[in-house]
Image 1 (spheres, rainbow, N blue to C red):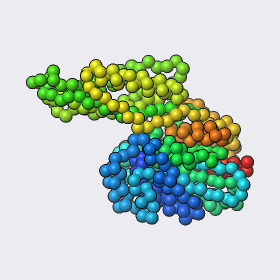
Image 2 (cartoon, one colour):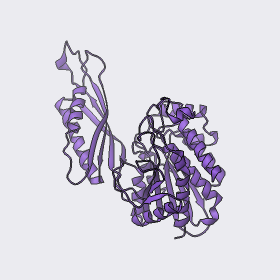
Image 3 (cartoon, rainbow, N blue to C red):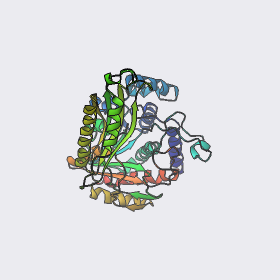
Image 4 (cartoon, helix red, strand yellow):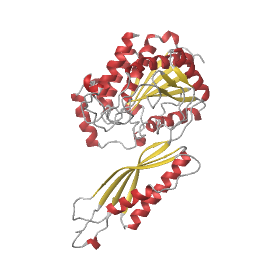
Length: 423
């Protein structure tokens, strides 16, 4: 196992050095594909496993081409590059044992965040020479997730005699912003799945601990809002202008004033506001990046609908046009208790301290689309958390994980594959 542990760390540090944003994981995906093919998995890549019409918030063609050039220059595997060159970077790897049994699916995500990584002298990735080489970083552990997925693939390949049925490994793009899962669900990648397991590292779970089912994810909607007004000279003819900035500012204030709902937890946040073109110009354009969340999908719908009314009212107040684009979405879901208990037992056997269920709020996750789809067809689904020591919180410039967490996570997931393939 020491050899695998070293390989997990090597993979994780390589992905950390070359982070890629959602729908741009071209270098990452091609390295994953090459590794999986060498292990003997059957591969489906890109448009084979992603519905193009359901890819929300996808980068422009210009951004995609620019990143393709970057990937080519930074170690992408040419053999698979054409299949991901348009930004459809999902991968499904299938291991068919040839023996009767269920289909078990494991999902890991691959994307990074638009955060500039710390260059502080006490930052381990800097000291160990695997700090990000560009302006993005893995500030949520997806580099570790991808490595865990490859580690699981390694154990499956080396120990296939212990397995029955089929194992599917889903490498998902664009989890950040809740964008990538629905495109893979709509492409049918879990239509044949009996057991589905998603995994995340960290999330305040202590090192050497394991949560077999986290039920605390909030439903969410991500909205890009634009206001279009009329520019005019602020001193000479202010009455001829239609101020898009004022509309946006009013929207920001009143979005924060949306009444909370007594039926459960609700959230709203405006993360960005961009407006204006000059000190003496009535702003004719403004843009907001907004998100809502709710403890259930119904509560999120309440927040989203209220937010749309606020935005519409702010536009009407200042006589400007507006548009709202949904660029990401996640629904609420609960893990299957029967599956959580079985995962709990596997974690205990791997030496981890396991908790069957947690309902603490842990943000939002679009793996809920996979979970919901599998459960609706009579299958079982869960969302596991692998505990680790964190250098800083998720989405922080100093984020880093304890790499000693990687191998126990892989061992737990592999033992679950053995356990679940029995029945």
